[in-house]
Length: 145
Image (tube, rainbow, N blue to C red):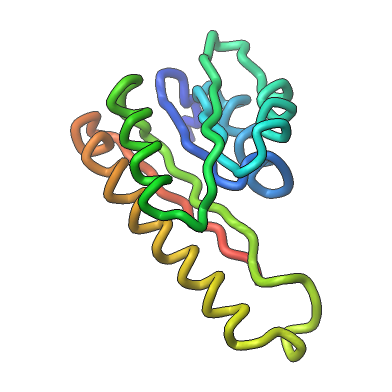
């Protein structure tokens, strides 16, 4: 199996910690240039410093608030317009507040579900045209509860 991702660019959501950071680190280790996305700029800067660049990759980050779908879509579109296509999307975000499922309200789940679903659609619409033009695209959706 060829896992060489040199020349590919990956956008990883929720990338300042946890599963998102681990995915970003692995993609970088495989040669991809990684664009980290999360809310906190300080966490993104710290995460950026952990990415390998042995293949000459250019890593970057986008600070974004996932509760504002239109703004995130505009940020990603502006970014790709200026830097080129992103080939891999890791759509990752947190679940409802931690705790027993029986203690979580339906509204907690509805808010997170809408956030995941809406953000995935915004990012797909922003990135898939570039993936098609590059004749390479991968989308991974990660949801936790």
